[in-house]
Length: 446
Ligand code: GDP
View 1 (cartoon, protein in one colour):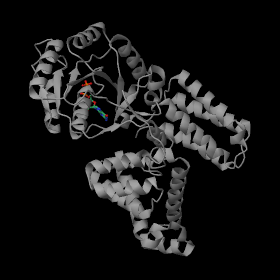
View 2 (view 1 turned 90 degrees about the horizontal axis):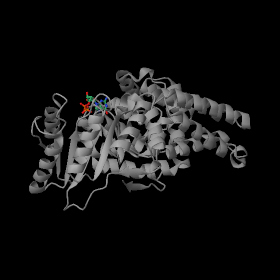
View 3 (view 1 turned 45 degrees about the vertical axis):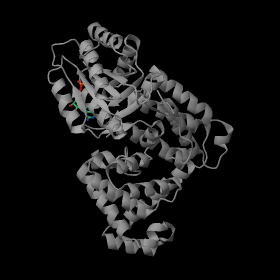
View 4 (view 1 turned 60 degrees about the vertical axis):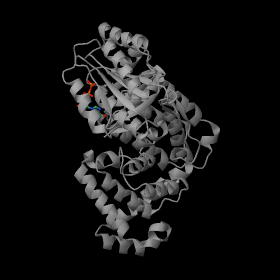
C-alpha cells in the first residue's frame, strides 16, 4: 500500500511523543531526528528533508507548543501542516479554455510511466464533468500503444483519433485538432511517445508537437515508484519541453512516497492527480492535505466519500459528508460507509483511506482477505450495538461493551479498540477542521 513503510515509522515516532505529558526540547529534537531518518529512507529529496525538519523544529520548539497542554499533539499538528505545505497546500486543477474553444492537453513522460493508461483515465474524468473529449494517439513507437488507447478510450466512451504509426506525431496532432474542431470536441488530449530514458530525439519530437498545435497545458506522467528519479525526470522535462503539472502513477504500490513528497518542493510543479491502480477508475485528484492525512495514519475519509459518490448512492454519500463536516460522524455512518465500500469493490484501495485501518496500521501486509475479515469483525461489533450506542458511543459502559463483545463473538478488547480509534478520529477531525473539509480549502487552476 502507498506510503505504508513511511507511515508506520512516523506513527511510531508520534506514539512516543503522545505518550509523554511534557516535552523537552531534546524530546522534540530526538523525535525529529527520527522523522528525518524516516523521510530519507522513504527516498525524499535530502534538501527537502532538511528544510522540512528545520521548519518543524523552529515551530515546535516555540514557547506555545512546549507550554501547551498537549505538546505531542501540537508537534504532530505542525508536522501535518508542514507536510501539506511541502506538497503544495492547495489543490490544483486543470484549467480549460472557454467551452466553445478547444483545450489541448499534451501528455508526456517516459515509457512505462503509465501515460497511455492515465490519458484514458483523465478522459473518463473529464467526460463525466461534461467535456466533449477526443484522444489523439501520437505514441507511434511503443508497439500496441495505439491499440491500447483505442481499447481504453472505448471503455471510457471517448473517441480516439489515430492514423497508425507511419505519420509523424506532430502531423497526427495537427490532423487530430482539425478532427476535434469539425467534430465539436472541446478537449483534445494528446498521448505522446516516451522512451525508456530521456533522450534528445524524444524531447525534440515533443517540442515539435508543441510548435505545431496550440497546446494549452502539458502534463507529465511519472512513476512514483522510481522515487528521486521521478523528480529528476520532472526537472528535465520541464527544462526541455515545459511542464505545467504532474501526475504521479502507481502510488498504490509505492510504500515509500519519496516522489510524492519531493516533486512539488523540488520542481515547483503541482501534482494534479495520483494513479492508485491499473483500473481506469483508479485516478484520484491530488489533495495535499488529504495525502498528508493518509501518510500520518489519520485516514482519508473525504476521498473515500467522493469515491462513494462517484460509484453509488449519492444521497447517502452526501449525508455522510455533511455529518463528517459537522463532526457528527457516528457508528451508524461508519457502518454505512463500510457497506458502501463493499459495493464499490477494490477493498484494499479504499481501506487505506479509513482511519485505523489505513496505511501504516498493523494489518499484516495489508492482505485483502485479512482486511475483509477485519471489516467483518468491525461490522459485527457495530451491529451488536443498539441504535443509541451507535449514535452516542459515550453511553457504552463496561457492561454494555461486554454484551456487544459477546454478541459479535469477539474479545472485549476489540470493542474497546474500535471505540478508541473512533474517538481518536473524531478528536482529530475537531482539531484539524481544514483537513476534513470544515476549514478553508483552496483550489486553483493551473
Ligand atoms: P506508457 O508507456 O507510459 O503509456 O505506460 P502504460 O500506460 O502502458 O502503463 C504501463 C503499466 O503501468 C501498465 O501495465 C499499466 O496498467 C500500469 N499502470 C499505469 N498506471 C498505474 C497505476 O496508477 N497503478 C498501477 N498499479 N499500475 C499502473
